[in-house]
Image 1 (tube, rainbow, N blue to C red):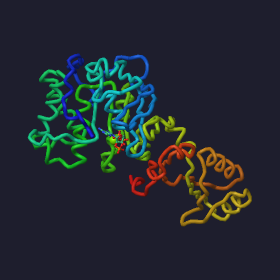
Image 2: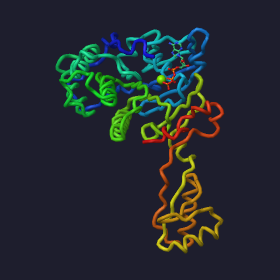
Image 3: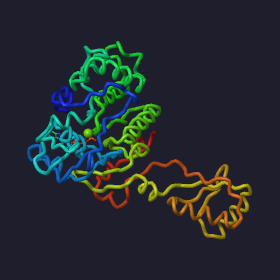
Image 4: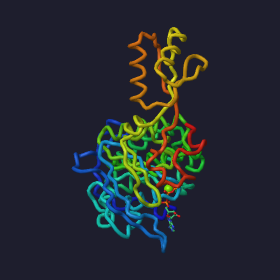
Length: 349
Ligand SMILES: Nc1ncnc2c1ncn2[C@@H]1O[C@H](COP(=O)(O)OP(=O)(O)OP(=O)(O)O)[C@@H](O)[C@H]1O
Ligand SMILES: [Mg+2]
């Protein structure tokens, strides 16, 4: 579903052109006040079906906000509204201070939009594709040429510059779609499923690009149906389900609350086992150490402090890499069959 995703952002005449380019993915941030995105009780119907039933949240400048929910939760519908490509039926959204229903040109000038599906541009080369979007934003020729070079370098697609877009793989097309969103240095980024289907290296690069943009002050809003996909990218996560916001968390808090298995290693395994037994800490012996039952970060810190205080020569307490899960309190509000991160395949990184 992408009604107008292929259309160039026609109303971008007011975008500011930067002649000198210092950082490849930099943004034009003029210290705007308030959050980059405000969603306030937004409703959208398709016939009698309620796709959005009162969604509310904010995406601050300087942070990456993840919009996480199962298929059909309303993520794309909401992002289309923010990108001024679909009208809400109730409620209000503000993007870079502009209401998409009142000032779509203002929204498009300030916003980089990456749809979940790549448009059909089979006849264009990679260079022409990016040039097309640069010109749609009214960037001058030399700025467009410089941006094309820099952005293709950023996403490692320079070798395809004169190739037709259709020769790119899915993941390469996705990286190209990201450059399209960045071409005019927007201060708000709306990215629909940007990490889906990317290989691990590309995902790390996406993380670095998005974190870099947020560090420069941009408000970055990214969607996914997989929490773990955005765990290392986002500062905040907004959970959505059935068209409603069901929870908003700082990613650090989610991580701190999450229980993970820890593996303890000590110079003397017998001393370690005895100390754990004495403290009634459940554990099992595994190859190369002892595995503790799942603990929060705080519990792990307390356990480590207790072992060290008791003279156990601990040499490491690494957490086993386990996917971040939807908080228990929210699970009732999220379709059990579609809990983000609930499927084995979702956990692959
Ligand atoms: N144009 C449309 N006409 C009718 N129903 C629609 C339309 N667009 C979306 N919907 C419905 O609205 C709901 C939300 O769809 P949306 O695409 O926003 O979900 P999503 O959270 O992006 O899902 P996914 O993770 O699969 O991308 C779905 O039930 C969908 O069928
Ligand atoms: Mg979607």
